[in-house]
Length: 357
Image (cartoon, rainbow, N blue to C red):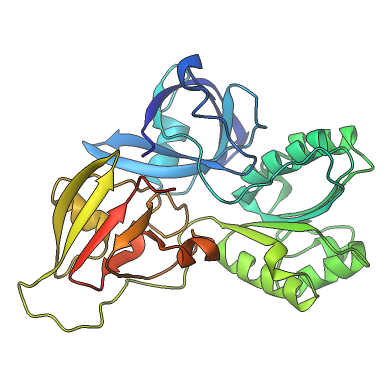
């Protein structure tokens, strides 16, 4: 199982008035564990008022570069992001797990592909890493990027993107959209929704069949953009999505069988790092992560919204039901992988294995 390592903040600066860019130094002794594919993210942990607060942030730098860089959008009332903005200083340390995630580009220097990316807000963070790596390491591939924001002032990594455009003017098509600023051309005003995506695609991608599509941003934007592309004939298997924040859909998982007050719903065995631990899943528990924590067992997690997949595990025995599967690929679900933060037992005994990959 992946473990937290202490990384030192080597640089910090304001990316926009509501976002921060951090550089994290990785000790040479663990750099091998922190090698990553473009698009992957870092689970992180801080302690506030004696309690752990965990979040996941995507890497915006390119593979092979040290230090690692991330972008943090500051959310009003966000415990972690406000700590990063107001209290975290250069020289401080953060508990960080090695990179993780299925949302990434598989780079092939011999490939000749056309990539399409649709991004909103801080969703640009993994996309910046993906786009830069493609342009630098796949010299025969091209990228079309549509990037939506409220205003230019809130646009993260705008200088990095213009720098890439200057370096690769023939291979990068870069288009910005703003929903709260008037633009010279109406096509660049508004949001990436079910109306705007077909308009942009027909105007700038006519006759193009993208080999890979990357969509990253808020839940609603992802759903409408992916549906719009499928309606335009884009192969669904070529569309890769990364959701930011807990999706609006879903809810708490439910067990079909009735239980009586005081019932132990299931016995749970957990395999981590070759060791086995056990706990009881009681009536009223919302998910495996919380039930384990209440009994002193710390299972991996970060977002607890079914998005980041830090809590991904494999069901070796028994059956569970999940509220959402957003953080998993279809093949993972078929192979028996689940999100512990979204799961409750259906059978009376289950065994989950964090060592299976």
